[in-house]
Image 1 (cartoon, rainbow, N blue to C red):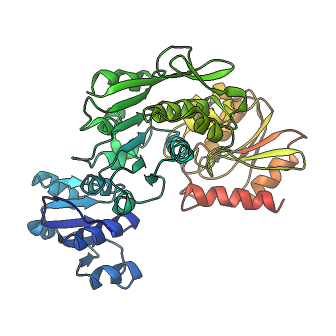
Image 2 (cartoon, rainbow, N blue to C red):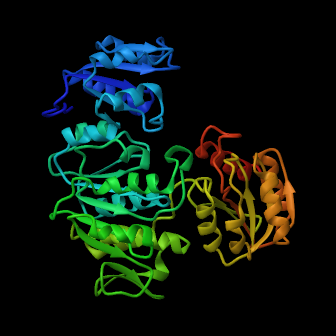
Image 3 (cartoon, rainbow, N blue to C red):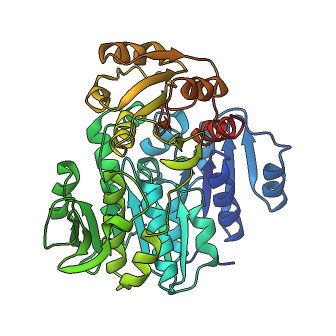
Length: 446
């Protein structure tokens, strides 16, 4: 396994002993960096903590002592920890670099890096790019916000291997040297404003994906999103658009085909993924892969077979002549609106979840095909106001099992039963994956 190369810091403080924190601490310590881990709630008797202490890592739990910074040259923080955290804020005040774990890949991986960000569609696009490159015979690794710790994956890559890294705004706030040779920005919608405070802060965090790009690099951007499109003039990299409009630049589409510049790449009718937003994800993937001269055969093989990522408009089953789709990853209004636009059949919509204080009026224009709402969670009352205003019947339930049964009872043959909550899951579930799994299990037992 590789170790950090030319890492300029001798003493590191890792804040947050989650999956990425554990991997970062182990890597730093094994690379000769004196490493301390600070976590408010971690147990010193956990298997992860014991493994770290066995290799010489110092573990501090129960509080965030500011004196830890006296012997620290760099802080590696869990992406979800806010900068208002007292320890992080003090590190910033002392001008101690504060990075996220993804920064460490810059000292490990020598091959090309494809960085993919956006408010929606990151995991689908990351998966598409990874599979297309694999189909073309490339040595390629997937990492980042998709679930694989980037610095852990980078420890075993070859010098010419390609890394495809899904990047959240939280991760991108903490980079200094990290460089995406191909940077992909899919879209920008209001999201995570409880963390970033303003849309402007969120947008600039996303824009960090362009940091360190050179004229040899590529910036693949959504030409249909004005918030993203404007950044094509703010990078030294070659700008490559993708668009749902007819064009002769970058990746584009008409009613029949997907194109790259003037080249016909794939038959649109054979693409398995549903929805215009997924066509955008396919276009982004095509633009990225054409930066590596990937064959159309490899692109077609994946686009014609790939049915979607789990919990992202995932086809579950055709049961009792109803079509069940799991879109638990739809944790905001925009994602749910995309899902509703994807279907021409009548939809029974299962929605609700964590109340972040917003209303749902922006979902109103997308309800023309919704024939029934099945609501749950903290936002059920707010969504009921929306549904009543649109003249859509409502059933409120407590559990996912009840939601699936109610959806079936209020549906007809050929209807789509869609879990697309428009809310985070944390009022009832630990993760959106857990929520989606509960839906799938309820469908299985229907």
